[in-house]
Length: 610
Image 1 (cartoon, rainbow, N blue to C red):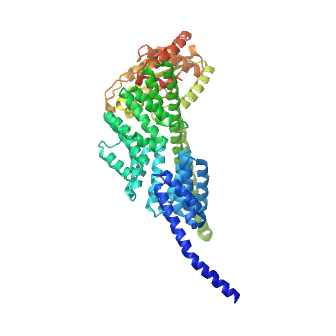
Image 2: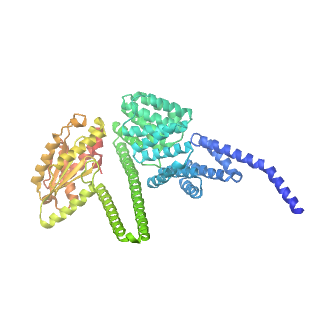
Image 3: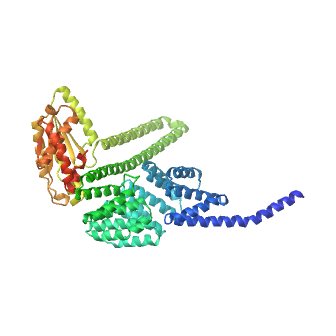
């Protein structure tokens, strides 16, 4: 009797409490929805909602607790606590069984990996996340993941892939906020691909959409792209007016990456317009936004602007300081770009290798199944066994061949300059040292030719990098004509090349260099779509004067290359053994030239400063 009464009492209490639990769950769901809405547009309100959600964590249902955990990790990213965010995101990814939460958390890890410069880990996680995307029905989650894929591919220099992913987001078209962000990423991809629309209407429409969604960061990033387009179209004053007008709004976002982007653009454009004081102030503001980041392009541009302003003011000391900071920032930025591109290549090759391994395992499984059938069919065992052995050997041989081809391909990529199909600097040095060692033992002469294109940066500036790449390829093809199979032609970096000639003395090398010079000067540039003259300056030395040490050969040839540049370019200078006075004159004259040289010439000479 007592047990019945107790059960009835518990049931009655439970029925009374049920509406309270249902009401609490609905309230938490509403808070989650609000937090999702404002998490990128209103960080302060997002933090307030997150605090309230954490205080009601115990009242939440299991799936709501996972959602709160995801928002906590997102909030840690926003506030810069990247290590905590990474730990919590990985923990949530391992524990959740919900596909949609796995996909969202995977996308967050990809974003976080990009922020912390762990691009290899981010791209690996992206592959896993995209593999789950077909199992997700929520269109907004699909848009988010595809948007993340677009951003990280842009960051790793794969702008064609970045644009494709952004256009997939735009094709879904279920969320205006997603269209805003994807539209900006698509424009960034098109800018780097040189495919921006000529008209202003697409930019205006996208800016209006982002303003409607109250996304000031995305809005002003699109304006920055529009300003760049206007400058390329000769509308510099319009670009300056646009950026100046919205600068207070940009600063109000407190987003360093956006602020430094806009400030550095204003500095660059004000400098071009002759407003040196404003250019210096904007450049300084851009630098102040990046005190802990030294590998972004706006920082490079800002340091260069301050250097040019100091140079125009005749402030030699300040110019030298700003130039050193510019050179350091430029090197850090280029190293970062190479690191990102390498991360993409590593993950791509890993994916291909995994696919090959899976296919190979599938084939091996098929062979095992055939062997089981052979066991069940004793009558035909001999014929089937022979056939299976032939198939197995053929399969192994085929995949061994494929793997060998991949290895050879990777080796070729590691040794060859991708643009000119000549030896890269590392492979050229390795081959040259081996040749010098062999010739030193045999007592054979070896000569070294170094040459550098004249005013190459002006070609890039006037006609674009596509034309510059065409020039480098055509010059390397022209010089290959003068190289024997035992000689080595390599690209040392930028527009600088070297040729090591076995069994050749200084006179013979000088004649080869002169032939190369004449051949380069006679290149017909019309196939590139532009008409201009290409010339190069050459420095020549040989082991009879410089010895069999590659470093010394390169140093002496470089001195002669500098002499050719100094004496008017488009000429060949051979090493005569007298280096002391030449070296001192080289160093002092070089510093004077760097301070007084025009902008285009200075850029082309940067690699030789170190």
